[in-house]
Length: 380
Ligand SMILES: [Zn+2]
Image (cartoon, rainbow, N blue to C red; front, side, top):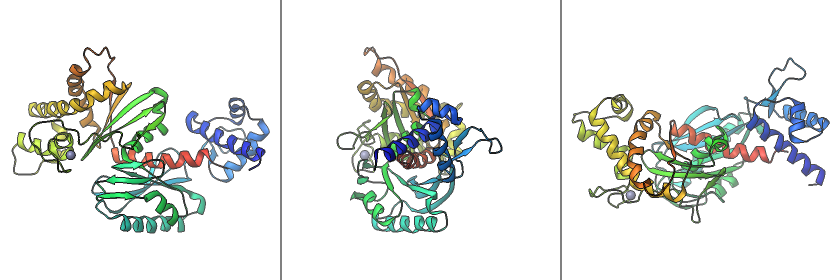
């Protein structure tokens, strides 16, 4: 690429990134902020409008503010809740559309890739060729974010050593990125909700069937030397000889995973009917004394594992994320109390605890964000 073409590519990327993080701006403001000549800004804007990357906020006005387009291009994203694998489209604002169930989660890599290939090819055949920027896949387990290899995933299989990103890149006509589900979730909040502008360091703790965490530090995802960072679900956190899905006893997941919480609830609230999380437990969160007992026990096991991690990395904020925000909100005061003894005497300022919900939607948004970020920064 010539120097001039490279400069132009950089300017386009800067302009798109600025509209993403700043919101609507006029051509003149973009020119001043980015130090690009007004003529060049006009040329770039014309091209990006033709490509449907950006649009005028008020098309009827000649000097209208400009914004990223709401009607495409999209990223495609895939994630699983442990039962089904879902595919959805994500626009440049992180809004989900066209969700569909792709297959069940217990599937071997060969069949999974076949399903993905069929679904994506169908999408590409029924839309403008440039409408889709790529496919992001959010997957629980140990994933190498540098090459998208799945080193180990229990929810999907079990899978071991699957070169998923490389394989799908060869099969599909759009770029593919594969990343760990918690890091996708964290990236959804960093990219679309601009979380990294408020907090330099944040620790995300995902509560679901499995328990794991992810860290953002100075706007970067951290996966560790062996991409194991955040795999806290199988650290011992009790002494009741509870069998975990991994085959060991007394893992954190065996006390704090949603299935374990439900079986604890079943003991506390004896009933013939199976207790369901959303319809049975959530309404009791505020006023049922046995529910307080349950939350306290969950917080106790979680604090045992989280306390040393919080001391080791000293985050500004710890974010609890599950499908149900109300559950995380109810848990926070108990967790604060249980973390207190771990943090006492260290002289550590306590991190702020926050609750986020809609975990699967955010994993999809995060997988989409990885694709959008890459396309936006390399646009030309
Ligand atoms: Zn385990």
